[in-house]
Length: 85
Image (cartoon, rainbow, N blue to C red; front, side, top):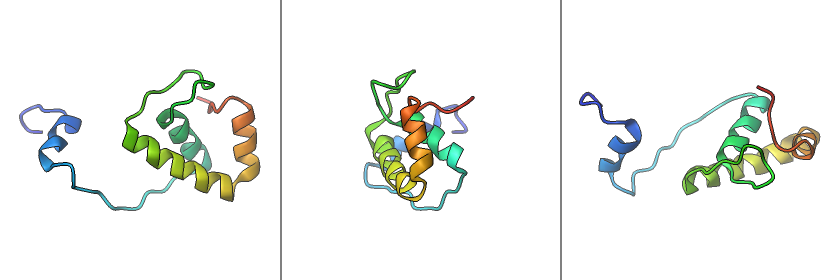
């Protein structure tokens, strides 16, 4: 990083079997925004093209969000999966 290499490129030297474990938190709107940005859906405008790994995380987050906030998820889904900016 000190030599000006981007973080996403620098992490490649760690190898494919290095995993991160941690805790994250956020509000419902934050998670909806994360899911909208990190999942590919042809119905969503604008469409996103995330890395496969992060899309899998976003899909799991959506399962949890839908389970705990079904009404909010349903309204968000009906309105095109977009979050207010």
